[in-house]
Image (cartoon, rainbow, N blue to C red; front, side):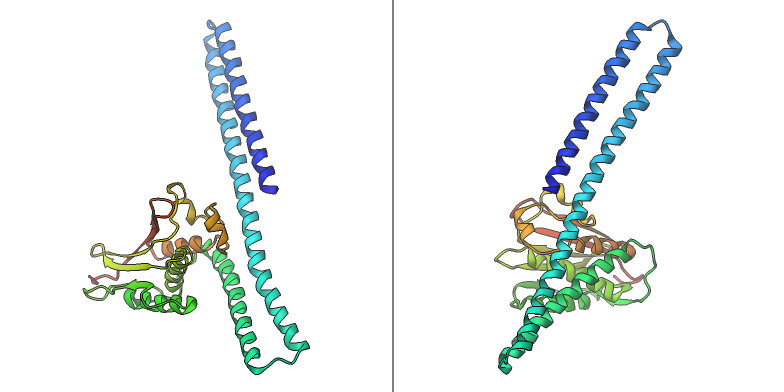
Length: 302
């Protein structure tokens, strides 16, 4: 209901802006026709007209952006609330069960496993919010080290396979055949980048999970990592917007998947802090997607 009301408000302001522009044009043209001999006033009228039009256009753009931003904030708050409330309610239920009933040891261990998984989910949500907050700060990376890109990706692959209990052939990764590609950066931050991208590739793959990873040297200075899935895909209009804070692709398939809309924003922020860039490719619904991460290599590494 709140989203619908804001969209109606946006339409009202757009119509109002268009009407004001049309009225201003009509008045200005009429004024010019009646005062052709007064050149000074004519010039003043044209300037004044341009200022009014510019103000109206900027005002309309600002209102539309503010409404969209508020919608994204509301969607983020709803997502975070759900991500926090659901595991808390689950943990509380299991704790009440353990407190009020005699539970067999095997069942007790099962309850502990579920509660631990819910705790990890809570921790992951909190960490995402904190990372998104830190991502807006222009601080320098602190824990800089020399990182073997293939080894880092291998660890990320194993972590995601374990998290989703995937088979060995679900994520294919062939390390580069040439000399080890090394980059300089924060190991934990870069691990978060590739784990997040792999996590998304698995979540949005649908029933058939098949993800491929390729790493190579683009040239003597840049290393490229391509992560490709064969899932739901991304519409062309959303390819750049997916890296914005709070943004989630407005499709039924995407909305079924839990998330806060912060993951790719964090990924882009970390990659930029490392002097790299990230982009996405897709041909649309059902065609899968590819994320390309470019990072500067260590000097002398080919």
